[in-house]
Every structure is written in C-alpha cells, then in structure tokens.
Image (cartoon, rainbow, N blue to C red):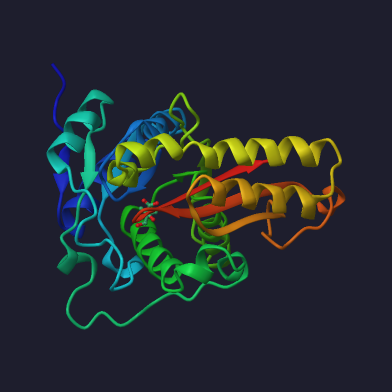
Length: 283
Ligand code: PAF
C-alpha cells in the first residue's frame, strides 16, 4: 500500500512542509510539471530521488505559456491518476497551486529571457512561450527553494533557457537535464501524444528516425547543410508540416554550419494533423 502525497495548495502550506524537511537537514529536489504524467516524468522523479532526500513535484498547467489559440483549455488534466503515479514513486509532497495563488489579481511581472530564448526555434513559433515558462519557473524556484530542479531534455531549448535564467538571477538551485524517455519505436514521450490519431501515431516516429539519420551523417563528416535539407524533405514526405529542423550549438543554440562549430544538437518541431511534436538529439 502506498500513501497518497500531501497536496499543498497555498504557499504557506508548501513552505511549512519544506521548512520541516530543511530542519531535518534534508536536501530538496523539485520536478516542475504540468501534470498528465507519463514515464518521462517518472524518470525525472527517479533522477530527483538520487539527488535529494525529498522530492517535490509541482503540477500546474501554466496559462502564461500558452497563446490564446493554443491548447490550454484542452491540455490533458489527470490529477487523480498523477497522484497515484507519484504515490507509487513515494513522492510525499505535491505543489498544486490554484491559478489565483500563482497569479493573484494585480499580478504584473513577466520575465523576458534573451539569449537561447531568442534562438529562432520554439520562440519563433511560440513567441509568448519562454516568457511564460521563465515567469512560472522563477516563481516555483522561489516558492519551493529547491537545491536541485529537474527538467526533461525533450524540451531542450526550455532546458537551456531555464538553466541560463537560474544562473543570471543567482537563484540558488542547480538545474539538471534528464534524458528523453522514448517509446520502443523512438517517439519521445509527451503529454500531447494522446492527441495523435492512429495514423498520426504511426507516422510520428519519423522525427526521431530523421534526427538519428542526420546525426549519423554529420558524424560521418557529410556537410551539415545537405544533411539537414535531406532530413527536412523526409519529414515533409511523412505528412508533417515542418516548423524547423536545425543543427545548433548545444549550449548557445547558435546556428552551426560544420561539425567543428562545437557540440551540436539537432532540434525539430513539426505538426501532424493538429498536434505539434518536438524532439532533439545530440550529434
Ligand atoms: O515542461 C513543462 O512541463 C513546463 O513548461 C514547465 C517547466 C513545468 C513550466 O510550466
């Protein structure tokens, strides 16, 4: 029998629990999520467990990172199932603030990240996104004051942006990226995969296949431009509307033209039907 986690819904309740952990000399790891938890989130919780005695999972579907035309309203919300999954992982504390606690009336501050947040990748297609992510993540960090915070590498640009923000704002938290968890056919796990119809789901692994083929080509010293151009064609042929397939410097996300331009990360975003998928891979 596993115990359901305590759910904190106010900042004072959260802080009381955190202080009790601190009083016992325990380290705290935060796993920020928007719920609809899957095996990728479980991997974050397990990585957190290896780094701290206490794992706090936040569940908050953050309105500030969705544009009005995006899926905030229909984003999957599976709170009870999420709590059961977290109980299985022996998570004791879930931070699930109501929107009015996170953004009370009169809330008037928004973080405007630059650098990797303006790389021309996600930011080009979701210009409001990183401002919303940074605002909520900065709040989560100051609310929970974790020693470490874990983010999936699947949202690679987000990971770079949040790492930079924590450093720039001297937030006393170590941001750690956790490798992407995939289905057997290579599709990266995502809460949005539930939107895929059967034929879309069958086509979806092409993104990972193309990333792997591009990485192999670049490692074999084929010209980066030609490799990426072939990858873009392949993705379009599979029925996707491509937002981007790019080779970027793994840390700055600046464009690269050759393998010598630094550690390379390949990043892709594409829509199949109404569902937008993103993925990335190290070269
Ligand atoms: O990656 C996510 O689930 C969200 O962007 C995050 C980091 C929880 C902020 O809302």
